[in-house]
Amino acid sequence: MKIKAICRTEIIYKNGKSPLAIRFTHQRAHKLVSLGISVEPRYWDKEAEMLTAACPDRAILQSKIDSTLASYRKKIQRLEALDVTVDFSTLFGTASKYTPQFVDIYFKERISDMKRVGKINTAIKYAATRTSLGKFHPAPLRFEEITLTLLNEFEYFLHNEGNQPNSIATKFSVLKAVYNKAIADKIFLCKENPFLLYKVGKHWTATRKRAIHKEDIQRLMQAELPTTRSRYTEFARDIFLFSYFSAGINFKDIATLRHADMDEGRIYYRRHKTGKPMTCRLHPLAQQIIDKYIRKGSSQEDYIFPILDRHEHRTEQQIHNRVHKVLVHINRELKAWSKLLGLTTTLTTYVARHTYATVLKRSGVSVALISESLGHSDLSTTQIYLDSFENAQIDEAMQHLL
Image (cartoon, rainbow, N blue to C red; front, side, top):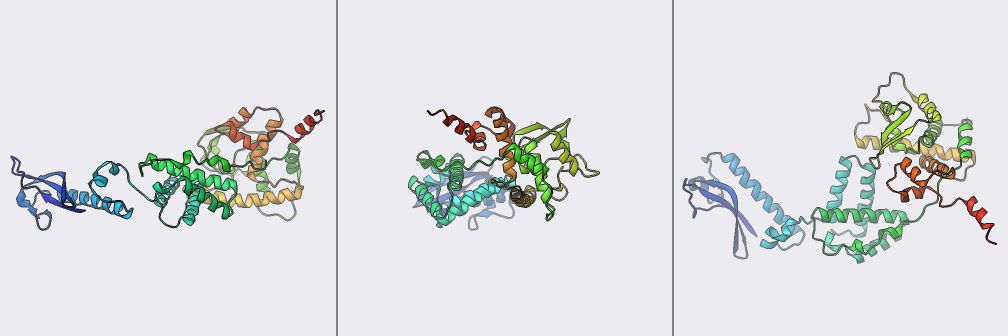
Protein backbone atom coordinates (compact mmCIF):
# COMPACT_ATOMS: atom_id res chain seq x y z
CA MET A 1 0.00 0.00 0.00
CA LYS A 2 1.50 3.30 -1.14
CA ILE A 3 0.16 6.59 0.15
CA LYS A 4 0.85 10.19 -0.94
CA ALA A 5 -0.72 13.66 -1.00
CA ILE A 6 -1.61 15.06 -4.43
CA CYS A 7 -3.14 18.13 -6.01
CA ARG A 8 -5.94 17.15 -8.39
CA THR A 9 -5.07 19.59 -11.18
CA GLU A 10 -7.55 17.88 -13.50
CA ILE A 11 -10.20 19.69 -11.46
CA ILE A 12 -10.27 23.49 -11.50
CA TYR A 13 -12.89 25.36 -9.46
CA LYS A 14 -14.32 28.75 -10.51
CA ASN A 15 -11.97 30.44 -8.07
CA GLY A 16 -8.99 28.88 -9.84
CA LYS A 17 -8.25 26.40 -7.05
CA SER A 18 -7.83 22.62 -7.23
CA PRO A 19 -8.68 20.11 -4.45
CA LEU A 20 -6.00 18.27 -2.49
CA ALA A 21 -6.40 14.55 -1.71
CA ILE A 22 -4.65 11.47 -0.40
CA ARG A 23 -4.02 8.84 -3.07
CA PHE A 24 -3.73 5.20 -2.00
CA THR A 25 -2.22 2.70 -4.42
CA HIS A 26 -2.52 -1.06 -3.95
CA GLN A 27 -1.87 -3.68 -6.62
CA ARG A 28 -2.15 -1.05 -9.39
CA ALA A 29 -5.53 0.08 -8.09
CA HIS A 30 -6.06 3.62 -6.77
CA LYS A 31 -8.34 5.23 -4.20
CA LEU A 32 -8.64 8.95 -3.50
CA VAL A 33 -9.69 10.49 -0.19
CA SER A 34 -10.38 14.23 -0.18
CA LEU A 35 -8.52 16.40 2.33
CA GLY A 36 -11.19 19.09 2.24
CA ILE A 37 -8.55 21.60 1.11
CA SER A 38 -8.23 23.43 -2.21
CA VAL A 39 -5.36 25.66 -3.37
CA GLU A 40 -4.16 27.26 -6.59
CA PRO A 41 -2.05 24.64 -8.42
CA ARG A 42 0.94 27.00 -8.44
CA TYR A 43 1.17 26.60 -4.68
CA TRP A 44 1.61 22.81 -4.88
CA ASP A 45 5.11 21.28 -5.19
CA LYS A 46 4.46 17.99 -6.99
CA GLU A 47 7.96 16.61 -6.49
CA ALA A 48 8.10 17.40 -2.75
CA GLU A 49 4.38 16.48 -2.33
CA MET A 50 3.73 19.55 -0.21
CA LEU A 51 2.61 23.17 -0.32
CA THR A 52 5.12 25.78 -1.39
CA ALA A 53 6.42 28.36 1.03
CA ALA A 54 4.47 31.10 -0.78
CA CYS A 55 1.07 29.43 -0.18
CA PRO A 56 -1.27 31.54 2.00
CA ASP A 57 -1.98 29.89 5.40
CA ARG A 58 0.63 27.29 4.54
CA ALA A 59 1.38 26.29 8.15
CA ILE A 60 -2.22 25.47 9.00
CA LEU A 61 -2.98 23.69 5.72
CA GLN A 62 0.25 21.68 5.68
CA SER A 63 -0.33 20.61 9.29
CA LYS A 64 -3.70 19.14 8.30
CA ILE A 65 -2.12 17.29 5.37
CA ASP A 66 0.70 15.90 7.52
CA SER A 67 -1.58 14.79 10.36
CA THR A 68 -3.94 13.01 7.94
CA LEU A 69 -1.05 11.22 6.27
CA ALA A 70 0.39 10.23 9.65
CA SER A 71 -2.99 8.89 10.79
CA TYR A 72 -3.36 6.60 7.77
CA ARG A 73 0.27 5.46 7.93
CA LYS A 74 -0.15 4.57 11.61
CA LYS A 75 -3.27 2.56 10.78
CA ILE A 76 -1.41 0.71 8.03
CA GLN A 77 1.48 -0.06 10.38
CA ARG A 78 -0.95 -1.38 13.00
CA LEU A 79 -2.59 -3.73 10.49
CA GLU A 80 0.82 -4.94 9.32
CA ALA A 81 1.96 -5.56 12.90
CA LEU A 82 -1.12 -7.74 13.43
CA ASP A 83 -0.44 -9.66 10.19
CA VAL A 84 -3.68 -8.32 8.74
CA THR A 85 -3.67 -7.97 4.96
CA VAL A 86 -3.57 -4.28 4.13
CA ASP A 87 -6.01 -3.54 1.33
CA PHE A 88 -8.84 -1.14 0.62
CA SER A 89 -11.27 -3.43 2.45
CA THR A 90 -9.33 -3.57 5.74
CA LEU A 91 -8.34 0.09 5.57
CA PHE A 92 -11.70 1.59 4.57
CA GLY A 93 -14.31 -1.17 4.70
CA THR A 94 -16.17 -2.90 7.56
CA ALA A 95 -12.93 -3.99 9.18
CA SER A 96 -11.99 -0.34 9.69
CA LYS A 97 -14.70 -0.05 12.38
CA TYR A 98 -12.45 -2.13 14.59
CA THR A 99 -9.05 -1.27 15.99
CA PRO A 100 -7.24 -4.61 16.41
CA GLN A 101 -5.01 -4.85 19.45
CA PHE A 102 -3.09 -7.49 21.31
CA VAL A 103 -4.67 -8.67 24.56
CA ASP A 104 -1.66 -7.60 26.62
CA ILE A 105 -1.74 -4.05 25.24
CA TYR A 106 -5.45 -3.72 25.95
CA PHE A 107 -4.94 -5.13 29.47
CA LYS A 108 -2.27 -2.50 30.10
CA GLU A 109 -4.64 0.28 29.00
CA ARG A 110 -7.41 -0.96 31.30
CA ILE A 111 -5.00 -1.11 34.25
CA SER A 112 -3.89 2.47 33.58
CA ASP A 113 -7.52 3.61 33.42
CA MET A 114 -8.27 2.01 36.79
CA LYS A 115 -5.28 3.59 38.46
CA ARG A 116 -6.27 6.96 37.04
CA VAL A 117 -9.74 6.79 38.65
CA GLY A 118 -8.39 5.46 41.94
CA LYS A 119 -9.42 1.78 41.62
CA ILE A 120 -6.04 0.57 42.86
CA ASN A 121 -7.14 -2.81 44.25
CA THR A 122 -8.96 -3.68 41.03
CA ALA A 123 -5.90 -2.62 39.04
CA ILE A 124 -3.79 -5.01 41.13
CA LYS A 125 -6.15 -7.91 40.29
CA TYR A 126 -5.99 -7.03 36.60
CA ALA A 127 -2.19 -6.81 36.72
CA ALA A 128 -1.96 -10.26 38.35
CA THR A 129 -4.18 -11.75 35.64
CA ARG A 130 -2.14 -10.05 32.93
CA THR A 131 1.08 -11.48 34.40
CA SER A 132 -0.33 -15.02 34.56
CA LEU A 133 -1.67 -14.80 31.02
CA GLY A 134 1.74 -13.58 29.81
CA LYS A 135 3.47 -16.56 31.42
CA PHE A 136 0.93 -18.96 29.90
CA HIS A 137 1.09 -17.42 26.41
CA PRO A 138 4.42 -15.55 25.99
CA ALA A 139 3.79 -14.84 22.31
CA PRO A 140 1.56 -11.85 21.45
CA LEU A 141 -2.06 -12.99 21.83
CA ARG A 142 -4.99 -11.58 19.88
CA PHE A 143 -8.55 -11.53 21.15
CA GLU A 144 -9.60 -13.61 18.14
CA GLU A 145 -7.31 -16.39 19.40
CA ILE A 146 -9.11 -16.70 22.74
CA THR A 147 -11.16 -19.87 22.29
CA LEU A 148 -12.75 -22.39 24.63
CA THR A 149 -9.72 -24.64 24.10
CA LEU A 150 -7.34 -21.85 25.07
CA LEU A 151 -9.39 -21.07 28.21
CA ASN A 152 -9.28 -24.72 29.28
CA GLU A 153 -5.51 -24.81 28.70
CA PHE A 154 -5.11 -21.59 30.73
CA GLU A 155 -7.11 -23.17 33.56
CA TYR A 156 -4.82 -26.23 33.51
CA PHE A 157 -1.77 -23.93 33.54
CA LEU A 158 -3.04 -22.00 36.59
CA HIS A 159 -3.69 -25.25 38.48
CA ASN A 160 -0.13 -26.39 37.77
CA GLU A 161 1.17 -23.01 38.94
CA GLY A 162 -0.40 -23.67 42.34
CA ASN A 163 -3.29 -21.19 42.09
CA GLN A 164 -6.15 -21.91 44.47
CA PRO A 165 -9.71 -22.25 43.08
CA ASN A 166 -10.84 -18.76 44.16
CA SER A 167 -7.67 -17.25 42.71
CA ILE A 168 -8.39 -18.99 39.40
CA ALA A 169 -11.99 -17.76 39.55
CA THR A 170 -10.78 -14.19 40.06
CA LYS A 171 -8.38 -14.37 37.11
CA PHE A 172 -11.04 -15.78 34.81
CA SER A 173 -13.55 -13.15 35.96
CA VAL A 174 -11.02 -10.44 35.10
CA LEU A 175 -10.21 -11.99 31.71
CA LYS A 176 -13.91 -12.27 30.90
CA ALA A 177 -14.47 -8.63 31.85
CA VAL A 178 -11.57 -7.49 29.65
CA TYR A 179 -12.77 -9.66 26.74
CA ASN A 180 -16.31 -8.28 26.90
CA LYS A 181 -15.04 -4.71 27.27
CA ALA A 182 -12.90 -5.20 24.14
CA ILE A 183 -16.02 -6.31 22.25
CA ALA A 184 -17.91 -3.23 23.43
CA ASP A 185 -14.99 -0.99 22.43
CA LYS A 186 -14.91 -2.62 18.97
CA ILE A 187 -11.31 -3.71 19.49
CA PHE A 188 -12.08 -6.85 17.49
CA LEU A 189 -14.98 -8.55 15.74
CA CYS A 190 -16.23 -11.35 18.00
CA LYS A 191 -17.69 -14.23 16.01
CA GLU A 192 -18.18 -16.59 18.95
CA ASN A 193 -17.75 -15.65 22.61
CA PRO A 194 -16.00 -18.57 24.40
CA PHE A 195 -17.19 -17.31 27.80
CA LEU A 196 -20.74 -18.31 26.85
CA LEU A 197 -19.54 -21.91 27.17
CA TYR A 198 -16.81 -21.54 29.78
CA LYS A 199 -18.38 -21.26 33.23
CA VAL A 200 -16.26 -19.03 35.44
CA GLY A 201 -18.45 -19.70 38.49
CA LYS A 202 -17.38 -23.34 38.72
CA HIS A 203 -14.11 -22.27 40.36
CA TRP A 204 -15.64 -20.38 43.30
CA THR A 205 -15.46 -22.42 46.48
CA ALA A 206 -16.95 -21.65 49.87
CA THR A 207 -14.33 -20.38 52.27
CA ARG A 208 -14.20 -21.21 55.95
CA LYS A 209 -16.42 -18.82 57.89
CA ARG A 210 -14.35 -16.28 59.82
CA ALA A 211 -16.42 -15.13 62.75
CA ILE A 212 -16.00 -15.23 66.52
CA HIS A 213 -18.64 -15.05 69.28
CA LYS A 214 -19.85 -12.13 71.38
CA GLU A 215 -18.06 -13.67 74.35
CA ASP A 216 -14.79 -13.47 72.42
CA ILE A 217 -15.43 -9.79 71.69
CA GLN A 218 -15.91 -9.16 75.42
CA ARG A 219 -12.70 -11.04 76.25
CA LEU A 220 -10.82 -8.95 73.71
CA MET A 221 -12.21 -5.74 75.21
CA GLN A 222 -11.34 -6.74 78.78
CA ALA A 223 -7.89 -8.20 78.10
CA GLU A 224 -4.94 -6.33 79.53
CA LEU A 225 -2.31 -5.05 77.17
CA PRO A 226 0.66 -7.45 77.00
CA THR A 227 3.88 -6.26 78.63
CA THR A 228 5.75 -6.78 75.35
CA ARG A 229 3.93 -4.80 72.71
CA SER A 230 4.41 -2.53 69.73
CA ARG A 231 2.85 0.85 69.06
CA TYR A 232 0.23 -0.94 66.97
CA THR A 233 -0.93 -3.42 69.65
CA GLU A 234 -3.61 -1.26 71.26
CA PHE A 235 -4.44 0.49 68.00
CA ALA A 236 -5.09 -2.86 66.29
CA ARG A 237 -7.57 -3.84 68.98
CA ASP A 238 -9.30 -0.46 68.78
CA ILE A 239 -9.66 -0.66 65.00
CA PHE A 240 -11.06 -4.19 65.23
CA LEU A 241 -13.62 -3.14 67.86
CA PHE A 242 -14.51 0.07 65.98
CA SER A 243 -15.31 -1.99 62.89
CA TYR A 244 -17.42 -4.40 64.92
CA PHE A 245 -19.38 -1.62 66.65
CA SER A 246 -19.77 0.37 63.41
CA ALA A 247 -21.73 -2.09 61.27
CA GLY A 248 -18.66 -3.94 60.03
CA ILE A 249 -17.07 -0.97 58.27
CA ASN A 250 -13.96 -2.19 56.44
CA PHE A 251 -10.46 -0.94 57.06
CA LYS A 252 -9.99 1.41 54.11
CA ASP A 253 -13.30 3.11 54.87
CA ILE A 254 -12.15 3.49 58.49
CA ALA A 255 -8.83 4.94 57.37
CA THR A 256 -10.52 7.58 55.19
CA LEU A 257 -13.16 8.69 57.71
CA ARG A 258 -12.94 12.43 58.31
CA HIS A 259 -14.33 14.55 61.13
CA ALA A 260 -16.80 15.98 58.62
CA ASP A 261 -18.27 12.49 58.23
CA MET A 262 -19.68 12.59 61.77
CA ASP A 263 -22.97 14.36 62.43
CA GLU A 264 -25.49 14.06 65.27
CA GLY A 265 -24.29 10.73 66.54
CA ARG A 266 -23.92 9.07 63.13
CA ILE A 267 -21.14 8.49 60.62
CA TYR A 268 -21.66 8.97 56.89
CA TYR A 269 -19.29 7.64 54.27
CA ARG A 270 -19.14 6.16 50.79
CA ARG A 271 -17.78 2.61 50.39
CA HIS A 272 -14.57 2.67 48.39
CA LYS A 273 -15.26 -0.76 46.94
CA THR A 274 -18.72 -0.06 45.53
CA GLY A 275 -19.24 3.68 45.84
CA LYS A 276 -22.45 3.07 47.78
CA PRO A 277 -23.33 5.76 50.37
CA MET A 278 -23.43 4.34 53.92
CA THR A 279 -24.45 5.53 57.36
CA CYS A 280 -24.70 3.98 60.80
CA ARG A 281 -25.34 5.12 64.35
CA LEU A 282 -22.22 5.71 66.40
CA HIS A 283 -22.27 3.08 69.13
CA PRO A 284 -21.13 4.55 72.49
CA LEU A 285 -18.10 2.24 72.51
CA ALA A 286 -17.21 3.30 68.95
CA GLN A 287 -17.47 6.94 70.07
CA GLN A 288 -15.10 6.21 72.97
CA ILE A 289 -12.54 4.84 70.50
CA ILE A 290 -12.87 7.95 68.32
CA ASP A 291 -12.44 10.21 71.35
CA LYS A 292 -9.19 8.44 72.16
CA TYR A 293 -7.66 9.43 68.82
CA ILE A 294 -9.03 12.95 68.31
CA ARG A 295 -6.11 15.31 67.89
CA LYS A 296 -6.21 18.83 69.27
CA GLY A 297 -6.78 21.44 66.59
CA SER A 298 -8.12 18.97 64.02
CA SER A 299 -10.22 20.44 61.22
CA GLN A 300 -13.31 18.97 59.65
CA GLU A 301 -11.22 17.79 56.68
CA ASP A 302 -8.69 15.89 58.81
CA TYR A 303 -8.86 12.12 59.07
CA ILE A 304 -10.22 10.75 62.35
CA PHE A 305 -7.68 7.98 62.88
CA PRO A 306 -3.88 8.39 62.73
CA ILE A 307 -3.49 6.37 59.54
CA LEU A 308 -3.57 8.98 56.80
CA ASP A 309 -2.39 12.58 56.69
CA ARG A 310 -4.32 14.72 54.22
CA HIS A 311 -1.26 16.90 53.64
CA GLU A 312 1.01 13.94 52.92
CA HIS A 313 -1.25 11.33 51.30
CA ARG A 314 -2.86 13.13 48.40
CA THR A 315 -3.09 10.74 45.46
CA GLU A 316 -5.06 7.50 45.35
CA GLN A 317 -1.81 5.57 44.99
CA GLN A 318 -0.30 7.24 48.07
CA ILE A 319 -3.47 6.52 50.05
CA HIS A 320 -3.51 2.90 48.89
CA ASN A 321 0.15 2.35 49.77
CA ARG A 322 -0.22 3.87 53.24
CA VAL A 323 -3.45 1.98 54.04
CA HIS A 324 -1.89 -1.30 52.93
CA LYS A 325 1.25 -0.69 55.01
CA VAL A 326 -0.72 0.05 58.20
CA LEU A 327 -3.10 -2.86 57.56
CA VAL A 328 -0.17 -5.29 57.53
CA HIS A 329 0.92 -4.03 60.98
CA ILE A 330 -2.62 -4.18 62.35
CA ASN A 331 -3.32 -7.72 61.15
CA ARG A 332 0.03 -8.85 62.54
CA GLU A 333 -0.94 -7.49 65.96
CA LEU A 334 -4.43 -8.99 65.71
CA LYS A 335 -2.83 -12.38 65.08
CA ALA A 336 -0.88 -11.90 68.32
CA TRP A 337 -4.15 -11.03 70.12
CA SER A 338 -5.63 -14.28 68.78
CA LYS A 339 -2.84 -16.30 70.36
CA LEU A 340 -3.03 -14.35 73.60
CA LEU A 341 -6.76 -15.07 73.93
CA GLY A 342 -6.44 -18.66 72.75
CA LEU A 343 -8.82 -18.17 69.82
CA THR A 344 -9.04 -20.84 67.13
CA THR A 345 -9.89 -18.15 64.57
CA THR A 346 -7.04 -15.82 63.65
CA LEU A 347 -8.25 -12.24 64.01
CA THR A 348 -8.03 -9.83 61.09
CA THR A 349 -9.91 -6.64 60.32
CA TYR A 350 -12.21 -8.69 58.10
CA VAL A 351 -13.05 -11.03 60.97
CA ALA A 352 -14.62 -8.00 62.69
CA ARG A 353 -16.87 -7.49 59.65
CA HIS A 354 -17.79 -11.19 59.51
CA THR A 355 -18.43 -11.27 63.26
CA TYR A 356 -20.73 -8.24 63.13
CA ALA A 357 -22.83 -9.95 60.43
CA THR A 358 -22.87 -13.33 62.15
CA VAL A 359 -23.77 -11.94 65.60
CA LEU A 360 -26.71 -10.08 64.08
CA LYS A 361 -27.87 -13.24 62.35
CA ARG A 362 -27.60 -15.24 65.58
CA SER A 363 -29.73 -12.55 67.20
CA GLY A 364 -32.51 -13.12 64.66
CA VAL A 365 -31.89 -10.16 62.34
CA SER A 366 -32.92 -10.89 58.74
CA VAL A 367 -30.23 -11.47 56.12
CA ALA A 368 -31.77 -8.67 54.03
CA LEU A 369 -31.20 -6.10 56.80
CA ILE A 370 -27.68 -7.37 57.44
CA SER A 371 -26.96 -7.11 53.72
CA GLU A 372 -28.17 -3.51 53.68
CA SER A 373 -26.03 -2.56 56.69
CA LEU A 374 -22.94 -4.11 55.10
CA GLY A 375 -23.51 -2.26 51.84
CA HIS A 376 -23.78 -5.41 49.74
CA SER A 377 -25.47 -5.26 46.36
CA ASP A 378 -27.15 -8.65 46.74
CA LEU A 379 -27.95 -11.25 49.40
CA SER A 380 -25.61 -13.86 47.91
CA THR A 381 -22.62 -11.73 48.87
CA THR A 382 -23.90 -11.43 52.43
CA GLN A 383 -24.36 -15.19 52.66
CA ILE A 384 -20.60 -15.61 52.23
CA TYR A 385 -20.22 -13.84 55.58
CA LEU A 386 -22.73 -16.03 57.34
CA ASP A 387 -22.98 -19.65 58.41
CA SER A 388 -25.87 -21.30 56.56
CA PHE A 389 -26.80 -23.04 59.79
CA GLU A 390 -25.23 -22.77 63.20
CA ASN A 391 -23.59 -26.01 64.35
CA ALA A 392 -25.60 -25.87 67.56
CA GLN A 393 -28.84 -25.69 65.59
CA ILE A 394 -27.82 -28.69 63.50
CA ASP A 395 -26.84 -30.66 66.61
CA GLU A 396 -30.21 -29.93 68.16
CA ALA A 397 -32.08 -30.88 64.99
CA MET A 398 -30.27 -34.19 64.74
CA GLN A 399 -31.75 -35.25 68.10
CA HIS A 400 -35.09 -35.54 66.32
CA LEU A 401 -33.88 -37.92 63.60
CA LEU A 402 -35.57 -40.83 65.41
